[in-house]
Image (tube, rainbow, N blue to C red; front, side, top):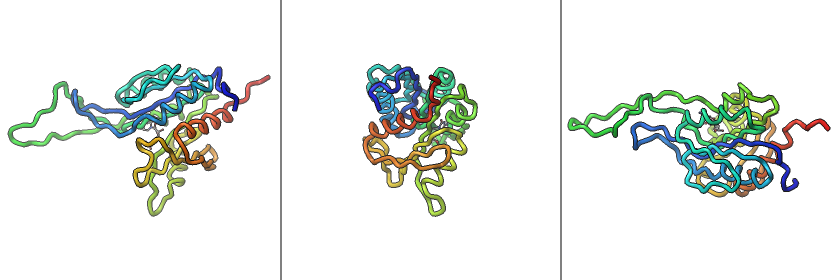
Length: 229
Ligand code: C5P
């Protein structure tokens, strides 16, 4: 591809992992480093795109030339992504979004009590952002990419699970990572397969998260409708 082949496109990317607070200092979270989303943002900017990166709790430095919007919780991420969706030619949901949040966030730090009682945490479901933006498209010409970290089991391969997820979520491309044995998390490397709407598995040469980002943008670019001459 040419160096600036994404010029004129606006891409919206989520990265990192959401935190769902129980009290001012404790939260339910996950171990996403944000590396994949940041790599996607850096590579898209280098290829000429206007990039908005909605970043949940990542320690990584802001990539050059990228607008970074910090968020903490899944609800904040939902608000930023849905609020910006109409401006985006592509949306890539690389963030690890907590499926549940505590039903109540208490104002003061939860303390131990003398009687040793253990507090109960009631959870409620967070909105599924990828599902929402895919089923309720802000623009018909927009390409939406999801990620799935799967471990196969006795009855289902990682690809079976990926195909079912693609169907359920309604996105255009799904990047499926096999995370059995703790691979991928926090690593600079990625082993993935990309599924398209037809369920075809496009193998990705195993390599860096930068390399996977390049493959993802190549695919997104082939899915955009060709402009009329
Ligand atoms: O269902 P699962 O969490 O495996 O799906 C992963 C994909 O869905 C990722 O692209 C993630 O960013 C997105 N997701 C979301 N909203 C949620 C949960 C996941 O957008 N509440």
